[in-house]
Image (cartoon, rainbow, N blue to C red; front, top):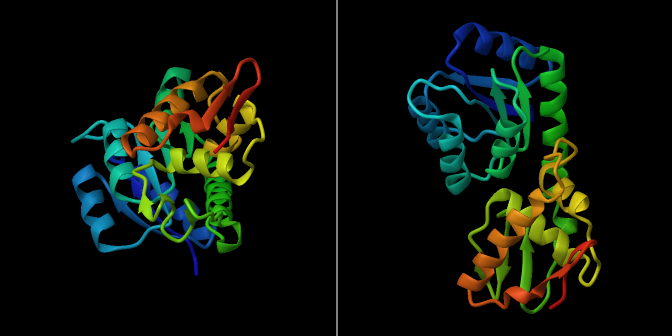
Length: 226
């Protein structure tokens, strides 16, 4: 089945250009010009990826990304007229899978979208599931369960925890964990992972799980030890 993409872009000319490029790449697409329209489409249809413009007329794109991450298991690629590193890092930290500044090449955009889809589809394959009496990597629901209860993780946190779980006791570098979360286009500062580890530990603690399971190896990275 061809990928189905939701384009949330308020500049109609850009949206139609993207739609045409996706059509040539055998992807179907729907266009929304406001976050409200996008929410309606997300409730009505199943999409494989959201292409999200930061500058929306009714809500900031970063705020809409937060909403999407709490409600949908959906890869997100962000577009912005300001290709600043701080904006890229913020978008990635909030759970975006990739980030592209305007103006952009339609061919590069399509290539990046295909890369995201390949990566996320691979991560969802059942043979990669990790299961112990306590922990379960539910790839169909895209979540980690502890004693049968799903943990309230963002997509990035899910990828981070499943990476640590799959190779317990192995020390992962900060760069390796960022790549596991975001792919090749991860934040340039490896210390960004510290923020994600801290958030993940907080969620483990809230679920009455010993947060010291995630062990810090100073100067090296992190491992999962229980």
